Length: 146
Image (tube, rainbow, N blue to C red; front, side):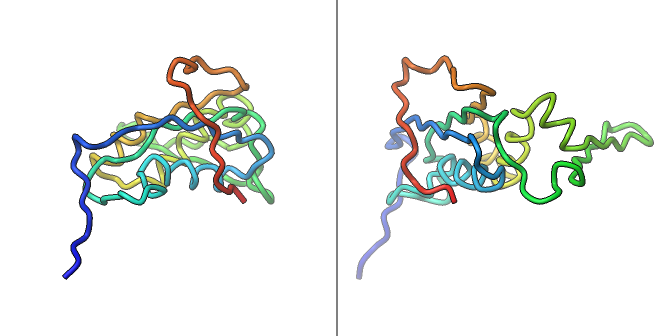
């Protein structure tokens, strides 16, 4: 009988990947980043172990929202106070803080558990092409982002 490989938390070796988001759809980039953060691209993926890698997303200001999403899509959040439901349009979000739009998209694709929250801390998003993680010697993501 063959047994499945289960990775132990102390055996996890993390790599750093760069995803260039220029002229790519927001959802496709977010799905790719979420998969890397979870570790689903690895043959040693174990669902109950935090085995993902670090992700740096560059050119977040050049990311694309397809269709009419830029004018029609909104993000709703609640302040916690009575009547505190707030709305922000994606046209404003992409103009003022495109990093937050990418963070919201990736965070929505990760599980709502402690593993998902821990994985989101390994995501770094930058507007331009410059980032300050050269010491980690990140490599460009060669996988497909449709």
